[in-house]
Image 1 (tube, one colour):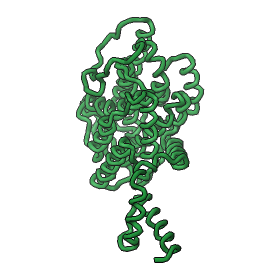
Image 2 (cartoon, one colour):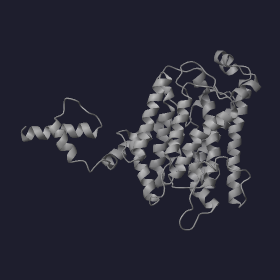
Image 3 (tube, one colour):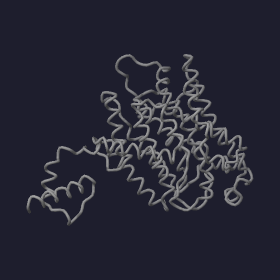
Image 4 (tube, helix red, strand yellow):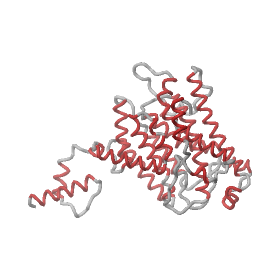
Length: 395
């Protein structure tokens, strides 16, 4: 093989190996050996390219603007050093959440979610696949380690919890009770907020407690917002949702009413009646009111906690997840922050409470008609409301 042909072949091998693809029968084995032997010391080069990271950041931001507008609008309230982590986490959430909406069967959805598990595992290990979200996750994980001098990191189990919970509801099984719905919200939206807190980095049981209530409120509102899409699903592979409640739609194209069964029974709601009559179904608004009230209660509790901590008062109830392994934190080095200081530093992470409250207020104005078209668009007041809330430190 002459010099020019060797150079051309080596470039083909480089492109094939760097892109993660293998072209069987089309790559010279000697060139492959020569190329790989000269690059064995660069396994993590993919996350060191500034151009690749910039492209991944743009891709994730575009995804948020299209599919999770509130999260993109709340980005300025996240500390600048943690914004890549925030963008990556929210893009990851959209990608996992909309799996159900972009696959025709739960089996295919489960395969795609397994890919997400593998991508996260590789990203946290510093060797992400050539996928924008994974690349930005890997970069953010490095930033967290650097910011905390190697003491802080993301909990991989929390990523897996989000994916596992989404997979559990791919085929739209019912929530047997309000507690089951709250558990779903805790394992998705609250867990996403825990990961965002770790991005600061922060290890605070108090901040986790506040985030738990806000995440539950957001998750419950997400289920309510997705109810019309589940009851009357459109054609497959369509996903156009401006809210941060995107993707709470299962992989079944048959109609389903995802309200807690105990609440439906109390209000006299029958699924077939909703699927036949939509918003005019008997008892539907009463059931929606009860579920929305629980979401609002969680926001009220979060606000009360913030007030109590700032006033130096003890929490009025115990954090139910405090004994879970991920919430057990080692003592910090140096001078420890007070609870009030922790909540002040974490306040930007709590901002989804603002967009959730806005949506719940609009639901009330619509007399709890969850099918109202006005509830399907992002509230134009959100940027102003968020600015006001952040400057006054009120959610």
